[in-house]
Image (cartoon, rainbow, N blue to C red; front, side, top):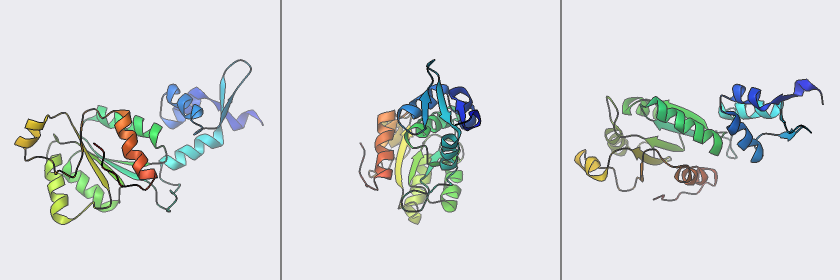
Length: 195
């Protein structure tokens, strides 16, 4: 194998837009093909990096022929980056769609059919609760698993009209274990209530 077919972890991280540690984790999980040199340096197959990039772009389908799309309705750029980083680890083949408020979320929902929606509550314009009410009234998003992730407590949510009982609510930031349960349900095609 010639040197043009392999790259180091730093170059792989730059191409994938993730940290070197994330690349190392993906190698350990077998999501990137790599090996260690006698000096202890990892060498990653360039074709493996290209495959992950194609998966992330939604170019490689899931078993049912459709890419796994996740809609994140969140106005905070730091939280958007947090979701992106976690989901790149948990479900690198997913196609992420970002919306900054409820209006953008509804528009995105009309364009794509996400399997999972993570919705913030406190956003400018249309907030998350108004978006969820609109979804209920119009019968939209029925095929998607929906979860609310918010920094508001129960009293603050109740003061805004509350979140529908069928939708799980997580404190912001959602932990990796809770997010893993949500994404595992997508890949297993299992509908489950996560509490």
